Length: 355
Image 1: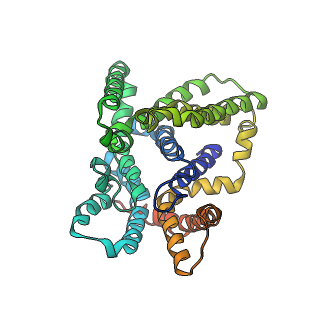
Image 2: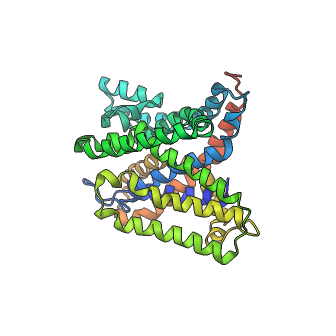
Image 3: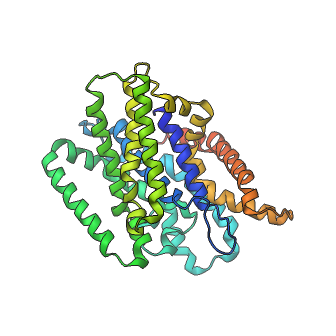
């Protein structure tokens, strides 16, 4: 994984945290309203890019098998998800009813994002809907790679039809279903993942030019992509929700990922421009490594901090509590990554269910 992109994973995870941090108890006022849709789009597009970078050639090999491939993806996702779900149950046990059982079962099995009702896709640890989407993308990945590599014309036609269908659905879907369909539903969010896959094909062509970029050129490319993303954030409040939930972010996110992946490969010293060098600061890279744990547990972490503050009678305004809560959630996520996530991945990696 490219260090600058790994650090960006951490920074965009913080954007999602700021989206979920409420400044107005009893109502809803996020610190960073655009951070949720932007952060999610970044993770989904980056996943398509990274999966293509690491596995697109492997899935074309004759010995490739879907079972072991999905097993490795499952091992990296499900154990931490179950721990977070158990924590959610412990925090909410008093409010469970028989109606909670089916939504929770879909959550445990990572099928919740297929339900267009909020009681399903936000069941359990609410942010885990994204993991449900990702498992579907992983399942589709080998078929998409083979389609685009072996039948490019057919793939182009299929992509055009899918794009037309996507924007048609965005236009006609009733307002009450926009979140469940445009923002959550796997068949719709597959578009983000495929944007990442397409970026990889573009990146592959660009690096094959063997051109070398100077540090100033790299810095300008990186700065342009960052400014494009900042511009998208500033304009987001004026964009229709049908666009702002997902597709608004495709161009700026694609620019960010392409820019930093490109400068890391084409710069003379393979370190990119000035911004890349800042992002290669070791603590940022480590936080990027822990970004999955941070994402999975940050909403639960915010809630636990609020509960503990009430228990000890600590009265802080949401603004004053923001930094302490962020520090606590970050420290907990780093500990979970080091002492739970990584050991679990290593332990379950030895399983050979499909091999």
